[in-house]
Image 1 (tube, rainbow, N blue to C red):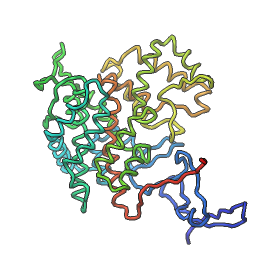
Image 2: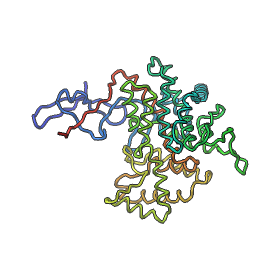
Image 3: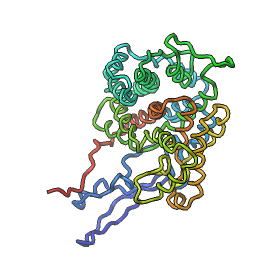
Image 4: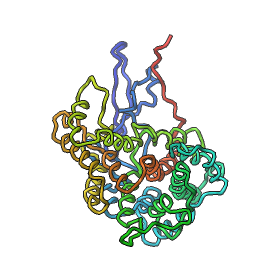
Length: 426
């Protein structure tokens, strides 16, 4: 027997019945898809805070418990015991790969990492000094012209080819966008290097492809750096129906090319309220400038008349500690000595964290440090320029976006996204 909810219109006394659909985890939903047809009214949900827009089995979040799972796997397990490529395989195939499957997946992505020569010319049309995110979004949309056949996908092999191609090429696109922004020549991918090391190589190498050797004779890309960035990619791989993912699904609903949908997600992620927050965290720490000024800015953050807001605190979904932030906090502590984290920024960040975790103002409002608070400091330690913080988010999130796109396209019940409105005009 179906569970239902009865709603009564107090103005007319008429009652309406709507089906309740149970989730395997998390809140059940009331199916109001026939609400307008039955009542002649719309529901109003500003920012979609209480609206489920799709059915999905990819990612699960329990904000109250601070829980995040990909395909049922806890994020803590994936970050500790599995690489980013294993996580990508999990998202795309609903299972972790065995050794042979991982090797084949890794090799395929290495060979798909190169860009068409014509696409490389696109970067040259952008002015140097521009933000890499603009070029990243444009280049991703342009990629659809080189692989237009992906507009019509008919079987699983085609879905996988399309997805693996964009996951493989995104680090190269991001690296090219950055190098052009600083007037440096492009560095081609090196298929002898792993996914994450190759990205760092394309960022840092000299035009001849050589890497700087430090005075101790160590190569400039240290294994601990690759491990740290790989963990960050994993933590960003997917995050349920966030703003940029909802945009990707919305564009998918129009029948647009998958890479155009990903480009739209990139543009959405660039916003400071979304993926651009970690860049803003570092800029704010630099603005504060000294541990001695932390109390001053904490007071400003608590003053309702002051527009100043502390970046990197609180989350739309998590009302407990962001589990990704916990992992990065541990990673930050581990890397503190090995990577010589900026002591001044670290001291400022630690002081802010200490106050926020003990101050009733922050505790009562559940303003815990989020992933952006820690990732900015760690990326700074990895010598990643601030303008590349959000592109790194893009690299990690691409697999989640394309997995969500595939899930949407395979669902035969989906419709074009078309929210309604409460009209208050003349």
